Image (tube, rainbow, N blue to C red):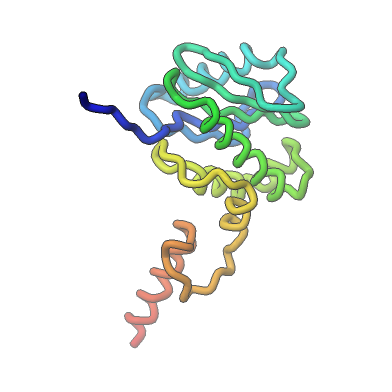
Length: 180
C-alpha cells in the first residue's frame, strides 16, 4: 500500500483592512488566476468573517473548499488559506508566525497606517514565511530578525541571507571582480 505524503501548502496569505481592502496579499497557487478573481475571493472571505469575534484568538472556517484561519487586530485582518485537507494547526502556526513578526516589525503598533508605512517589511515578511506555497518559517521573532537584518555581513553564508541580501552580495562580488 502506497502512502501519499505531502508537504503542507499555503494557498495565500492576506492582510486586509477593516473595510476588506488590501493592505498586503500574496497568492501561491493559480486557483485565482486574475486580479479580479483574487479581489472577489478577498471580498468573499472578508464578508463571511467580518462579523465574527476573532480578536482574542484565531478563528477557523471552511469556505469554498478552503480552510481559512484568521485573526483581527485593531483595523487589520490577517488570513491564511489552505486546502480543505490541510492541517489546521500548521495553518494556525503560519498565521501566528506572520502576526508575531508583524507585531515585532511594527513595534506593537499594529494598525493600517503603520502597516502601510512599513509595507516593504511586511512583504519581506511574507517572503520569509512562505515560498511557492511551501512553509519556510513560522517563528515570528526569527522571521522579524531575518527581515530586519539588512545590514548583515556580506561574508555570511548565503543560506542565512534573504533573497534581497543575497542579490546585493552577488552584485557586490560581481562589481569587485569586474573592477579588478
